[in-house]
Length: 396
Image (tube, rainbow, N blue to C red; front, side):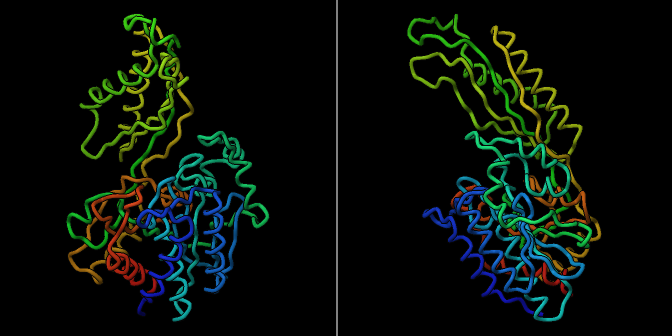
């Protein structure tokens, strides 16, 4: 059973035109944006043409359903605010092509999914988290994005097309194909990676409350500068993590917002996000304790205060061993000695779906390890080889 690589690549390139950034192959298609909704409508038409039944659930997760019990293949089609063309889209188009190929050759039933808001406009893998009952719809409806827009209002944009949530019992398992978003496969000249586990992730916002004051008349030694508190915190964290973390542990500061953000005013407030990832849940707990205690220490030292938002995140998740073995056998058959086992340092919808059914992931290389950037790319032969491994695993 041979894949139709021309059709597969054509669909991938057509999808990237929806929300095209105009810079390289970059795409701007955040959740619930006009481009995101247009892309989902395009996918729904493709699903129908492939003999699948398009089905939007209440939050905009889009399924292409086979009539009978089936394996589910997919990922997401929303992007980062400055995203690449393959992050998520690859897995959805792999599912579409395999569903068509299987139908054309009387193969096993395959359904396809594009989950909503994987990229976290409102939370962490929001659409699949709601479907897996990790996040309740009531809780999700109260989520607010960085611009103050509420999830409950944004999801109304697709409400005219939405039906009930799909019963996960109709699926026998889930496989997500994705770009690695890291350097290891590319640097080792490996064709695919079989994901063994997905690291855990913690994410929260921290706010230092200092004293807003005149920038010209307030002596340096008398300032309670909220931005400087954040800088002190960051320096201390890097030192205090040293004896706790491993080479694969990562942590990132983002979303820095200074108030009142004026050059003649000492900042009275600084809010920023703190995210950390590791494959060991206990290590994540230790890091959280260090973050909280260090922030409190910095605030207390300078007579300031600190606030912590609600914690978002997921625990580390193991991929299904049986599905891993099937993918390994297919990889060895399709690209002998050019595959490896690999841990996912990025969060994916498969981590949520694993709560519902056996789940697995397949990675293909990212050129120079770059993702979440307009320059994100993968050699087209690697895309085809990844689809070939999936086809051998599922259809044979």
